[in-house]
Each structure stands twice: as C-alpha cells, then as structure tokens.
Image 1 (cartoon, helix red, strand yellow):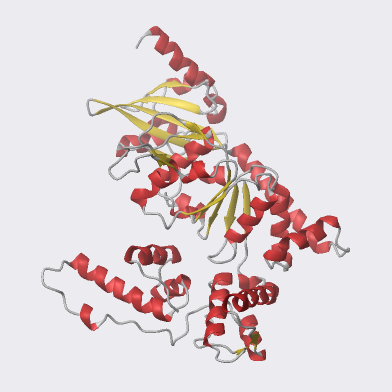
Image 2 (spheres, helix red, strand yellow):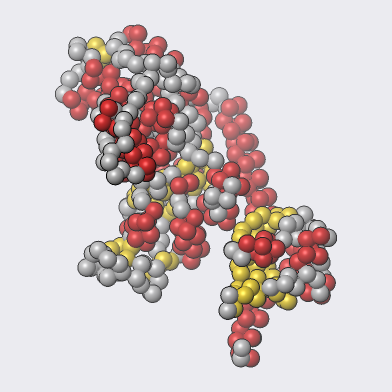
Length: 472
C-alpha cells in the first residue's frame, strides 16, 4: 500500500462517525478509531494491546462480533452493550487473501442517544393521549378540520382520532413512518391520507406490496434496469418503483417480507438518497417520502435475524399502531354505511340492512378487520334476494374459526401419485387443489389463512403462484 493510500485509510478511520476495529485473523486488535475508547470505556493504547478474546472476557465487548465472524467466516450484525453501558449496533466483515482469513473489519454505531429520543417521544405520545382523554371542550379549528378530512376514512373512535391527529401533525415533514397493525385495519388508507396531508400531495403515491413481488424479480422491479441488463429486459430499460415515487410518497406494505438482500439495498438508498439500476454504474438521485407498513412484530424479526436492526431504526422514526376493529367498534356503523353506499352504486340497487344484521355486525370480532367486514357485507348484499339484507351463512368469524368451516380433502384426481410424478410435484398439486377449493368457499385471503394456519401474506403468494382468484 502506498503512503497516500495509508493516509487516506487513516483519515477515513479517524474521522468516521462509526467506530472501527481492525483485527487480525488471529483476533489481535491492530487499529481502532479514536472515538471508540469513549464508547467502550478503555484507553486506545489498552485496546490496541489486546485481543478480542481478552476484550470479551473482561466485558468490554459484550459479545465480540469479531469472534462470531472468525467462527463462521461470514459477515455478522448484532447489538452490543459496552462496558460503559452504551448500546451499539455492530457489523463485521471478513477479509480473505488466497482463501485465508487475514482481517476482520468491524464498525459500530452508538444507539443510546437514539433510544433516549425514542423513549422521550413515547412519553410525549402518552402525555398527548392523556390530554385528549381529559379534554371535554368543544372541538377547536384543528378538530373540525380533522373531522372534515376523515370523512373518507370513517374513523370516529377516540383511538383512531389520536392516530389521525398524529399523522396530520407529522405530515408536513419528510420523516419515515412505520405503520403497524393487523391485516385489514386500514394501514393503506391512512398512508394515502398522510400523503394527501403532506407537502408532496401533488406527487405520486406509489404503493408496493413486498409480499406480492417474487424474490427473483424484486431488485429489477424496485430499482429498475438498463437496456440489456438481463435476458428478457425491455429494450429501452425501465425505471423502478423507487424512481417512480420521485417527488411523492413510496408506501411499502408488508415490509417484514422484504428479503434481507433487498433490506441492505433499501437501507443504502435511504442513507445515500440515490440508487443504481441493474446493469448501470451511474447512481441516480431519488427524492421521496417513505412510509412502510407491517402486520408483523419487526422487533421480534430483528431478534430472529430476519430483519436488519439498522434498517428497523431508520424506518421506526414515527411509529404508528392502528388498533384492530374489535377494539374500536364505534367505527363499525360508519364503515358499514359507507360500504353499503358503494355497493348500492356499484350494483344499481338501493338495499338496506335488516335489523338483525346490526347485532351480528356489532357483535363479531372481525379477525380480518375492515377488509373482512367489507367482504362479508358484499357477500350479504349479493346473497339477499330482496332489497333487505339479511346475514348470510356462514356468520362472520370470531376469535376462532367456526366448527362448520369447510373440510377440504384432496380431489379424487389428486389422490394417487401420477406416473413419473415427483413428490414435489404431487404436493404442489395437492396445495393447488386445496387453495382452489377454499377460494370458492371462503371470502378472503385472511379467512383462508385462518383455515390453513398460515400467514395471510403466504396465502397471497400461493394464490398468485397458481393464478387462483377468490370467487365468493
């Protein structure tokens, strides 16, 4: 290495915000960035004279990510608690020369201050919630404006108004928003409302279901590609969904289904504000507001190694949780009336609800939430021969699927193993037949997921794989 290259490397290590460790293949600390001593609670000279084995044994590294890389010969990421009590996210990468592990480069980022800010934000949210509960005054101008804006969302419950007020106040910023809640609670609808409230409302709203794009197509769909980037690529190339969101809002639904490789690439886009198309070497600047949604617990996915911790912190700037419909039943009447009006307009008849239907609507738990409620209403509308709608059979699902859910057995054509048919092909045929039968008897992908004991996103992927549509 030339003297210039050495000086460049030294400048990078000494001026970086991250804290670097350069360790030999045997675990000896060769160099560290100056700021590391404050975070890890030991003088630089002491750290340089140690091995990662000693630093872990004395509690300075709890645990040592370098030892994990030395053990697996693979990159690693984990959360550390240092000897000074600081919480840091650490990443480490192996360096091989002629197949031999010669160095391990690790860097860590102090998250303690970020965690304190998030705790302070949570406290402010709690105080704001308590203030709203105590307030019995007549609605002010902001409350009236919120009422007008929420007409399309049918959100009248106290808890949903709190969510809406929070979104309305953060809408003018470009802060990333993480929406959490069960499938069907209305995350997409609130994301669209956030876009309408934002200063980007004249730009596009690009909605992406991360669970619906096959993994092998994900990069080309999201990042776009240049002409000739791969076999079958369009001659003129293609702008990806990230570029299409320029000047507007990018909404990534089912973010928990994002493959790990794509998580890394998305993180880089968020950090750099640029992306590179497939088959291109030129980065392109992008400018969009990022809103993501999930019905999964991302924190648990991080613990399980399925979701990057640093991406989680990048996304979780404004966390918003939408409660299930069973916890805000006062929203049901407005949702029902709005849905009934749409159905009457769509099918050209003016049907009304029978009195007994309301007890069913208000008493059900709706595990599929608003989406299941709307599916049930449409089925009831279509199955009622007169202009008075009665409850169809089966009734809406409660906490557990009812005992009379259809029992699905393989069709007679799927019973025997066909000649030259492999086990994989046979099981795929059984899966396809089962999904086809359920799609004709159950009203939604959520209901199918409940019947099969799998996630709703898995049902969506399987239906798309076989080209099956729900027909009830």
